[in-house]
Image 1: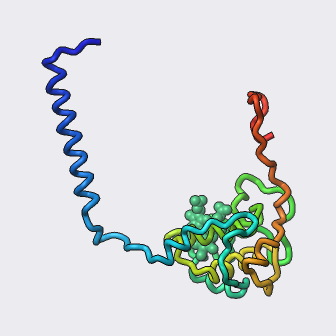
Image 2: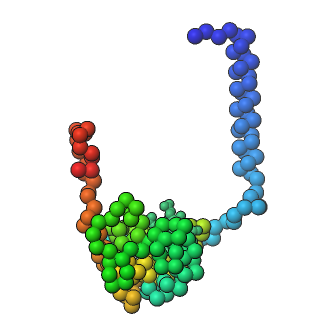
Image 3: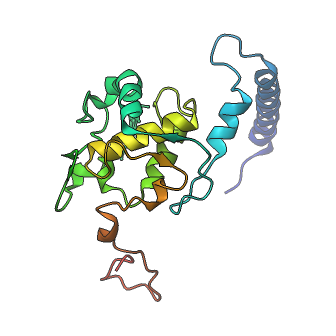
Length: 198
Ligand code: HEC
């Protein structure tokens, strides 16, 4: 394709001007102080959000909590979205089964949110620590995250109400659905008739 110079030259100039405008507006935006939204996170919040807890419990910080303590926190900070007993309000249902009576059997597609479905108790800690409450992720203290994790494990029938959760005890909690996941195995060469997770 061939364009005449009469068209190309003004077009290139227009591009250059647009690029300069875009670049300078970026600088102006970057320098503007955000005075009307949000706030600077505290050092503690940044440190907390940076923790990644492994399935085996690596990086779990010191601290502890029980289901009783968790129940109070849950009522104040979680029930508004997840329902009074974790049965789900506007947000995901977090509880299936009941204390002393874990959910038995399969999980349907709709049932993949109650924490009894999860493979590792430590992931529950990591998730709550990082992301919940949804509008204030990263603000909970380690003791509070242990207590909330204990409460949800208790409500799902996985631990006892008096069990103390800390960096040693939490990784030892056996999740009831642990063995029901199919490990992903890479298949080479790929077989179009068989999905790669077989
Ligand atoms: C403002 C509403 C809100 C509040 C308050 C809230 N959550 Fe959530 N929560 C959500 C939403 C929305 C999701 C789904 C997020 C997604 O799928 O990305 C979620 C997901 C979760 C999950 C994962 C469920 C799953 O398997 O998908 C857990 C566990 C959880 N919340 C725990 C808590 C705890 C504990 C608290 C209290 C400290 C809390 N939430 C407070 C809205 C909320």
